[in-house]
Image 1 (cartoon, rainbow, N blue to C red):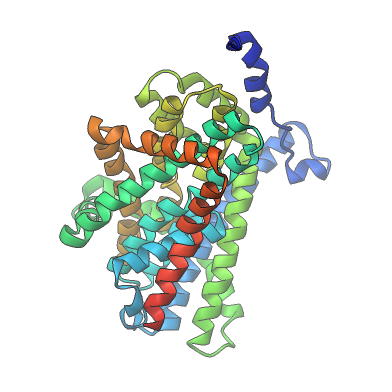
Image 2: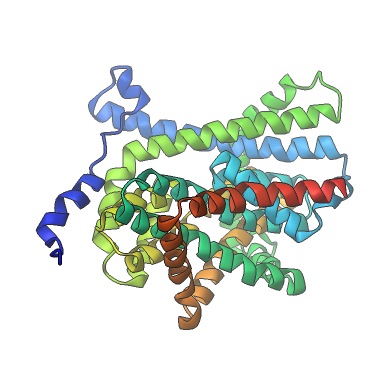
Length: 410
């Protein structure tokens, strides 16, 4: 019988998984160094957030120009919540960014997209965002045990978010629970009777709106020669392209600035219990502005054996909460009634993830289901690799596209 390897024997593997090449800022390539480099890096992040908010504003204006106040009629095919859900899954899987999907959706809501259509899309983004870390785990496929651990650590995120949607989408369809909660808090933050908080939030919104208006109007003016509704469609395309570029840039810059500190947060908090794990997952995701990045960093560590599935699980749950920050930032692109609806859409994302954490992770009989499902699937995938391919392609590509096209055609 072969002896189990000692902790010391396994430690180099875990350390090797943590060691990653030093990330280099594009400004460092231009010869900028030292404190000046740090200042320029942070200014670049601020500028990118500015462009993000501006692009979201352009989406709202473009959607109005494209639909001519007929958004509900034009999006009748997506009034089926399941189709909206699949749109969110497919869009996020294709862009590899739930932040892009939710930011675009916030802009569309401000432009007139009904919340009944937007909410399932936002929920679908939560499923689509789990694709990245699942793909990362496939890189371990040659090592049987590493793949088993890594694939389980990646798909526990899938199972949790699928369970969350299975619970809250029917509740939303029946009772509008997420919209009611989001509207309640949006009224307190941006309503006329919200007191000091509403005044503060409104003041920040007015300031951001004033700062972003010149660039927003400049983009719209540059496209003013195109007749409606084509102009609106072009504005949306340009804005979505900007959001994709900007979110990727922000993610890359924050990796340069924060990944080392984020890993310290991860290593310091991951083994201290579920609440610490959830908190570290949320904090790390806010620091790097990407749940895909934070969970993908965790998968190799789990595969190496540095952390167990039970330790990784709460971290991924916290990452769901941390990723809602981008949509909340996007809501500052608007003022007045547009800001109110944009904020409701952003708060729906936050409410969904917080409630999912409280219900699934908070109830013992539900809490164990995602890790059990992930372990079961990982064991199948280790025995027959085709199961991993079927899971990835089926959940994230084939099912969403088939349902969307079937609804449109029939």
